[in-house]
Image 1 (tube, rainbow, N blue to C red):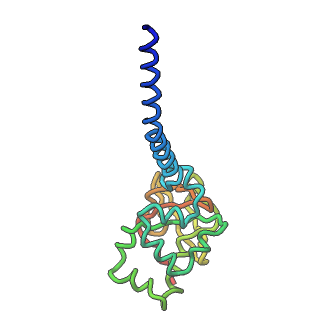
Image 2 (image 1 turned 45 degrees about the vertical axis):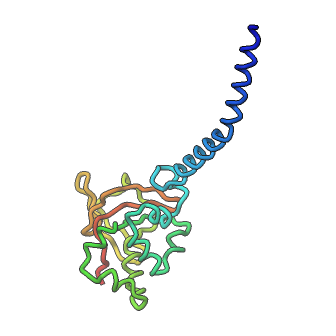
Length: 185
């Protein structure tokens, strides 16, 4: 008689396992999806190293205007290229500080050359990390120079303040700025 409860327990365990297997499959699928989401997120450290500057900026959510401008200027392939590049990336809030109509005007097809000049003024050849920055002039991709000033822990690029540094990308680095840089003609 002692064996009968063991058989009942074994049957119950098998029944539980059979009904649990589909739930375990679901659990593994969910766990896999969560793991994939975390490893492909641009906001989680090393995963962003696999994306180019354009990919990181696109996924960040705070550079929608910049990404739209890069597309309008036809610079996606360039900024997705080998690099390395250092990009001083103005946020959407930085673009909103421009006089009304400025962004809309720059995005017009007839102003593509001007838009390209503005955007390439935000790009320095090479990968310059925050620890490498010092007060200096930095030559941009458009040929003009940026005035970089370091005062304590504050870094100014022309009249923009660097608010976040060293966002990695596979082809360079992004430093976030609070003002759109306009080259002096």
